[in-house]
Image: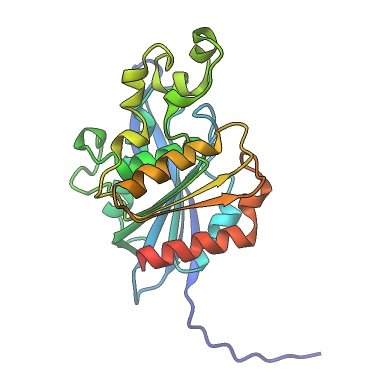
Length: 281
């Protein structure tokens, strides 16, 4: 059997590159340095530039794997984006604001090499889950230059759209039975302080503390049955952004617990794709 196809090759070819070093940071008690890496999926298209979306993996600031969701990120890229996923230091390596400065360094790197990866550097989105949702919100809202450290400081780390999934937005609002149990919480380990005993300082590291009328568009996705990060955490951020007159929407996934499979269904990803096309194209 023989078949001949005549194919109109109008769509670009997409490529994935993994393990790109975007920054070097102190490690092992400041005695050594190590690479921070990102993965990127981009179209090899000489005719146009594409909006870029940076994905941030979750894991309670205790673990992270930048490559674990590449199958979903590849589908998002093929809908018309450059999509990257960046590593950040976890709480056993360095306390806040290190993970935030790492993500901002990744954005600056991508802007510095925007021509190489066909990126429209004026149109950046950020998205992440759980701890990555926290970093998504902080990246979008915390624009103080003090959070930009390291390489490529001539480039901006600002983003034009944000989609945090089930994000911790006010870590002082978690119900800890005692100060001793609060000390062992992922939030306390990330911040390097007991959030129950240092609420004023902890509040300064919360996304809700950085809400302003200048915030970029937000779409928050949260399960109504989340036993890890209560749904109220997403609502708090939504309500503060709305009160400030910002462009914000919250999608409540009925009955979904933390990181449930509902977040990885086509219906959810269609809303994500539509959001970023609407805000970044």
